[in-house]
Structures are given as C-alpha cells and as structure tokens.
Image (tube, rainbow, N blue to C red; front, side, top):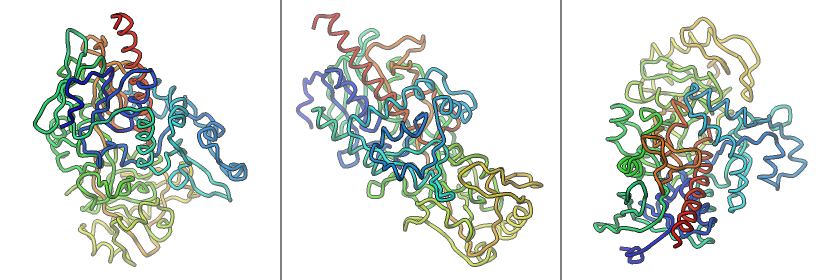
Length: 505
C-alpha cells in the first residue's frame, strides 16, 4: 500500500494514465496546482490504449508549412519532393460530419477541429516528437511522395514513443503517479466534488481534492458491458488495447450525477489478424496486428461471399466500422484476398512475422487451404473479375475504378484478382473503444442531466461522449484525447485557482 496517499490532499487528481490523462495532468500542473495521477494498471502496463496505437494523429494543418513547424527537421530537398494536399479545419470538420452521418455534437466537433493544430504544437512544446506518416499514408507517384487521406502526421516510435515523451514530461514537472490504484468512487458534497476513493489491494483510501479529471477510457474491456450496450455478439470481440478499460470512470461519473451521452451502442472496431492476442500485448505493441490494406482487396467470408464495399472510401474513413461487419460473419472471420499485383502495395503490418497468411499458386488451391465454401468462393471471385471496369488504378486517390453488374459493387481500386501467387489474410474483429460516454461542455466540464456543470468534475479522452457515432476519421481518437485532455486539465487547474481565491485558502 502507498502510505503517501493516507491523508493526502491534492488540488487535482487525474484518473488514468493514457494520452488524454497525461495531457490533462500536464495542463493542470502548468496552471500551478498540485496534481496526482491515479492508474489502475501496474507500472509495467501503464499507458492505456494509447500505448498500443501506431501514433497516427489527425490535425487540421491547413498546408504543408504547418506540418514543417511540427517537424522542423524535414530537409528542403525532401520537402520539394512531397505532395501534401491542404487539409484545413473545414476539411476535418466535414470528414467528422460525413463519417458520423451528421450526428457528431457540433460544439465538440468544432472544438476538436479548431484546437487540433494548437494542441499538436503544445504537445511538441511538452517534448512529444512527431514524424511524417509516410509508410501508411503516401505512395510514390512520378518520383514524388504523394500523401492522401488527411493523416500525414504521427508520433515518433508510435504510441510507445508518445507515452514515453508524456511520462518524461510528468517527471520533469514533478507530477506524482501511483500505480495499481483503482478509482472507485467520487466524493461529492452538494454539487461539488471534494474527493476520490481509491482501492489499493483490499484497502480503500479517500483522497481530498478540489477537482477530478476522469480519463480512464471507455468500457471496451468489460465483456458484460459490451454485451449489455453494444450487443451479445460483442462478447466474441478481441480487445485491441489495455485490459483495464472496464468502464470504472463512467460508472463513477454516472453515480455522481453525470449525464450519459453519445452512442452507447456503438464502438470503434477494426479488422485485425485472426490470431491476435485476446488483449493488447505489451511485448508486441504498436498496433502491429491490424490489417488495413483491405481497400486493395476483396474480402470474403466463410460462405465465400463478399459483404462490404472494400473500396467505398479511403481506409481512414471505413476501417473503424468494418470491424463490426466482420464480427457479423460466421465464426467472426473473413479473408482479405490479394494477388501478385496488389501484394507489393500492402501496408507494413502485412510483412511482419506476426501476420497470418495463406498462400497458393492458384485460387483453387487457395480455397482448399481455407475454411470456406470452395464453389461459392471461386464463383464470387469470377463474378467480381468479370465486373471490373477499365480505368486507371491509383491508390493515392479515389480513382473511381469500379465494378458494374454485381449486387455489391466495389467503388474504387477495383482490380482483377487473377495473377498468382494469391494471398489470403484471415481477420477477425478487434474493439478499440466504445463511443458512449458522459456529456461535457467544450472545455471538458462534466454536465448533469440538466446540462449544468458538476463543480470540480472534468472528463477527457474516450469518456467524452457525443463525438463519434458509427465511425470516425482515422487518427481523430488520439487527437480528441489530446485536445480534450489539455482542455480538461486547464479547466480543472483554473477551477482550483478560482475556488482557492473565492475561499481565501
């Protein structure tokens, strides 16, 4: 047991230790208040879901020169060979509203978009290092590196690096972190938060504090909550990240009077390697099991049928919802199919030793090696190949190269699967985080059922409901965590200082 917590008194306690939580802790500390970070996981498993990401982070950068401010060491000669389409606030906001079908809370979406570049530059000031997301978001075209999809930026060393940089900043600022400590209850007097109850082993400690920032993730690692809110089939979903995101923060907030908000029946999920670990593996982090080159594939289930338009859009705008479609298939499995022409174009994760792949020189042999209905499998591929229309294939744009005459079209990047060898990558569904959360205002203040702030209570990261519905633009989760983490921490620190002035403490 951490004896230092007995009788401890802090200004702000941050619950969680991922990207959003640490941004909150740093922002609060920069206001001059005393901050404690409470983390349920042991130290060796710290970092929340953020530790497992590939570090891609979406930002409204307007033009390439803003990116060069974030990455100042890009040589001029390299910059001259980069084509990076402008991606401004209007573009980011339009993508948010398009993929959520207009359901994203406009106030929260505008805050996310409007604060994105400033937050990235603030993160850089805190020691976070960034690099171009070249391997996964660009192609070489006529000797130029051409970026696509509005996601050219990532943190160095992926999520591992992000968390290393943020934890180092915590150390520099003297912010205390306690591990193996589970927050279980908010202490409330009237409408004001005055403390937090935590568990260490079998003992409970009540901390006195003036404000609490809840940034402990959603409920994706809680099998019963997944079944209750998202559906029975979600019991079978693989958890891509930390095993500790079981909805503790949500339970505490709702018990304290917070308003439930957002799409509790929805989540971010992806197609991931069929043999992925059941939870995020701290020995193999970095999002290495994902399989995101499916727009160049056709994807078939065990019945030998296609079930999504693989080329409906860039993978940035479809991958977070296609995991759900894979989960619906028999035995929760599908096969991404490529031939010798498309295989060299696949993302880096397909080349790792962890990638599960079945290879054969003919489609008939491939079908024999898969657990599929062979006749239907071969018939679907033949029907698809006959439907592919002429046109120029270009994976750096939505090229319009499509199919005609089949019930389920492929809208872009439709190329025939006909040149051996052939490759099938089996995938299943991995859940990243649930979309339901609590209602906050744009500054991160948690609201009650009358849309009034609960004094001293703030939330950030996955706990903020109302931003994502059904889908999300790739990289916006990390950006949301950082934006609302910084905002919530700043608001918590400001609240403490104002409260201190008012009481004369």
